[in-house]
Amino acid sequence: MDNAFTALVLEQRADTVSAAFQNLQREALPEADVLVRVAYSSLNYKDGLAITGRNKVVRRYPMVPGIDFAGTVEQSQSSSYQPGDRVLLTGWGVGERHWGGHAQFARVESAWLVPVPASLSLEEAMGIGTAGFTAMLCLMALEAHGLAPGEREVIVTGAAGGVGSLAVALLAQRGYQVVAETGRTDAHEYLRGLGAHKLLDRAALAEPGGPLGTARWAGAVDTVGGAMLAGVLRTLAYGGSVAACGNAGGMDVHTTILPFILRAANLLGIDSLPVPLEQRRQAWDRLARDVPRDALKRIVRVAPLRDLPALAEEIVGGRIRGRVVIDVNA
Ligand code: NDP
Image (cartoon, rainbow, N blue to C red; front, side):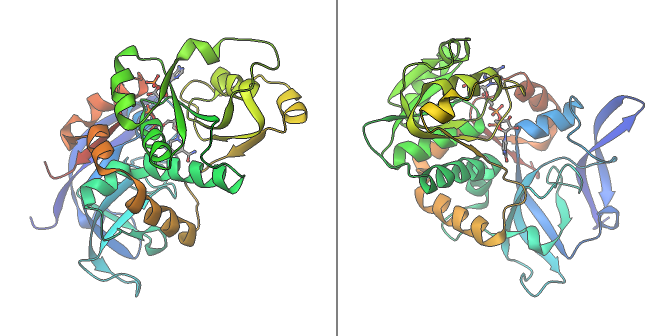
């Protein structure tokens, strides 16, 4: 049947979430104005949580996971897109509330799509994906609060993860002195290859300490949260900012007021889901220009759709380095 396609489908029975590949008809896709032939999706921490059913990421079942994808427009009821246009999508609750990219087709709202910048292939667009987009939002927020390349260092936590790897590469490319925090000694060479000038062990920042430590960082991209974010706040230099985007290491942050009132610290929250279209386009234009392609090659590996259930376990277990692009047609 022409209309059939493969998707990973999550279903919930009692308290158990199951993930299985199904052959679906296009008619089964949710209502929306653009049908996209997906070429690549990716694996994000949130996808791992959704597929393993470990967290309340998915708001309704059955659900096709995949919080991002890139592909070509197949059918469009929107004047903004024509069949054949190259598009990408990150966020908007796709893969959580609305069927996502771990499938060969997706039907989504035109307002959620972004044209793929001409200099990026669809595979590169998903190599960057939600992780790179979030790293760029962090960089833009830090720069809007006065961060500029200089003598003081900028720290990236969870540096060997997806957001972390892209943040290290982007900051290094801009000329920042990047310190990469990681729990993996076997990732040191990888992180130096992305442009990190120093490595910091996980325990150094996450250990409890007094309300203030040695003032060190001009800025920070924190993908870990919890005790790590508290550690970053204690050690920010005067007027420094941390862009907090993740919780891979925990939700509860125990800190004090002192970094804020004695060191004028800025805590900048980052949410990549509902970013307005104009800001999305700006971020993607910068990503297309600024992500070093050699670094992207080091960060990304490509895996077939069928590997997703096993990869989901690996990412929630903190064992995925960099980014995994999912070739939904392999
Ligand atoms: P990854 O799993 O690829 O990276 C997370 C990294 O965090 C790991 O590689 C590891 O770094 C570190 N880490 C994991 N567990 C712990 C722990 N217990 N203690 C300390 N460090 C730990 O995930 P992503 O890069 O996809 O996402 C990172 C975070 O950002 C997630 O929490 C995700 O939900 C969030 N996120 C938020 C977005 C937003 O819009 N705010 C958008 C995208 C992601 P290392 O191996 O170097 O030690």
